[in-house]
Length: 319
Image (cartoon, rainbow, N blue to C red):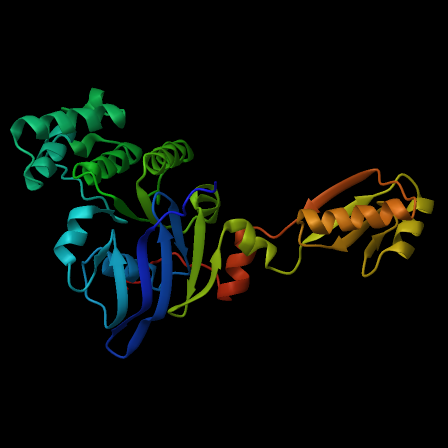
């Protein structure tokens, strides 16, 4: 028997937000399944941070409906806050406190009580490999340590949904990998992650589903593979052992790009199994042997540029 689908952790319908005369979100729809990672992509100023600020109850929206962790955003904001955590672009760590004191402060804000608060802080310090630096001032932490501490502080209240707004910006590759492993571990434990990022490889690595935001609208949504396959430009490259086989294949197949020097044909394809099976069946019926086959599909960079029509810039808009 097939398992029941996950219920939505986040449901957004027709969400709208303007600042003055500028429309930032123009009726967006989003659905995020419980216990998954969802990534919102888009160029700077597209409204990603605005969406996070609205869904985390930091600012009001102008129209539409939204439910987060089963609660209505407009009428049950306090219940939403009890079930979410937020790690923004800029660390919320207090540099004048130690790592342990930052966590205990969060425990006090959640009214966990002295014993439970210290137990939770100790568990999180261990989980994020910060025990050795627990009593050092946060101002002495490296960028990667600060981001881990920031996320640990978010987890003090054991949120069901976590909003991560560009969590690895400025981190070195090793620290980024550590953060990725942490995010995967949270999802494996049933937490839902809503991720915005400027790093397309990050979305490709982590996200179960992706939405691309541009001009205040969701211009595409799906898995990373679905978004890539939906973009023109995918092809299969066939290499042959000799010119005779190349010639035979060129006659047997339609709409190919031929390279006589490399003995290759480039055949348009979405790279999916049905298309590959059909291509190989045609070659087999024509008794043409292929020496080498490789599939080339667009990556998320191609998807991003094709859907948004512009690249990222170096400065994120205040929106």
